[in-house]
Length: 360
Image (tube, rainbow, N blue to C red):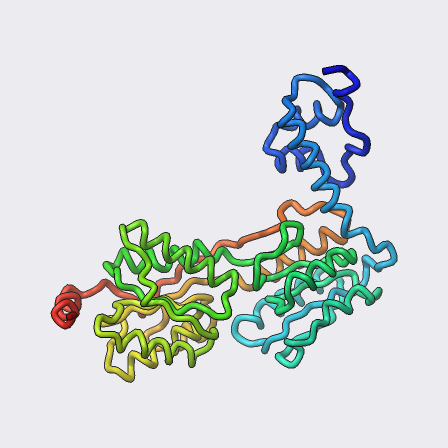
């Protein structure tokens, strides 16, 4: 290989990314990146290609937000949350508002169910008064997000409904590990026949939680029983309806894990109507740890999502982008925490024996 061939390709230079960024992205040392950038020897063709691709990739990501040169970087931040600001969404929006205030940024809020079907994202590129946007569980598809990205509008997605592209900033809770904790808690209490009430239409969060549930069962040598899974909207009525279906099975589950705390409350209602005691005859686990989880009797065992932290991290990530800094992480999953309360208990040996006798 000649010295001419060892020269870096034309345009192979770092923009706002650093040598450390490239090394982490390509999975090589900083010294290796330096050798490639300077056209030095002793680098394999494969390694050189990985570094070159990493440079191109990172330059693309870090330069893109500057594409709209006429956009005011000191402008207001558009916050879209097309849902009622209660329970789950209220703490997120409040945290976003408080953090933006700390950064002395004006917030333009678009909230409420009335705007759910209004694809307002397509109009944002024309808003030169806006510096960027924060989108909370946006109902818009990937096409609308790509339009914002390609128009040079900086934005962060909180709790994305679908898998967002790799070059889109997003913040969510660690749904897989949260569900893993919930089902592991139940298996450690002796439960094996565990019902699941998930969400439909399928959300990325729902898929991740089902995967976490399956992983926890696999750890004790069990597989998911698809006959014990139900799908519905994340509301109390869903828990009541499908909780009733599961509890009316000839060989009913001894525990039910729910997509959120509201669904879990519906399951508690269904159990009470059938004279099934919680947690003596049925364990129930929610997700989110919103206020309603502490208002039930018994109080719900649930998985706490860091809702306020999700809002704070989203604003911080957006501010870094507006200040010209490259993102240190494009997809941030914040840790969840299992909160054990009164709705779960160890499975009773008598209940198991009785259920087996009743089985055909």
